[in-house]
Image (cartoon, rainbow, N blue to C red; front, side, top):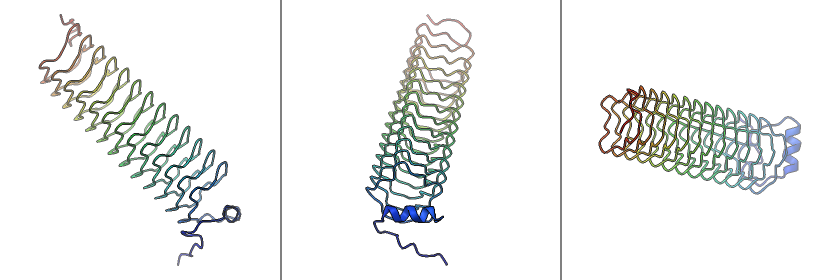
Length: 290
């Protein structure tokens, strides 16, 4: 039978928590430490499941391998926090400041990170499927091989973010700001990138088949060897984009601007180019369009 935690639901004394932690105890689930200060502490592998940690100062805190499942962290200061391999399933990190935080290999499925500041944070290999990042700042964040499938990243700032090999299947990126983002080898099947800004982004060898990229801005983007078949690119800006050996079969490019785009060896089988602008574009056969 599980032993009851006398701290559950009550506001706790930090000194008592640290004494019990130092003595080897790790189970502090359900406690209420809202508004407290845990900055600079090493609380690795602590169990804080379903705790109330809103508005807590975690600056520089080490929480490696911690169980923070379904924890309320809304509005907390977490600059430089180390959460590597922590359990954040269902946690609420909305409005948190996670600047330069280490979230490598974290499991944050079904979590809330709306409006969170994740600038320069490391989310490499993180699992954050079915999560909400609406309005979050992920500028220069590392998301290599992260799983963000079926998540909502609408209105996010992903400027210069590193998303190599990331899984963004069925992810919502409507109105996302992603200039100079690196999405090489990323998987975006069925993703919704309507009106996203991907100027100068690198999507080489990415898989965007079946995605919605209507009105997307891909000016000067790299799409070498990219799979974009059965994709909606209606009204997209592809000026100066490199589509060398890209697969655009069966895609809808109605009204798209492909001025000066490079389409050498691209697959345009059954692609809809009605009203598309192709001035000075280099076509699949290598011939420039007049």
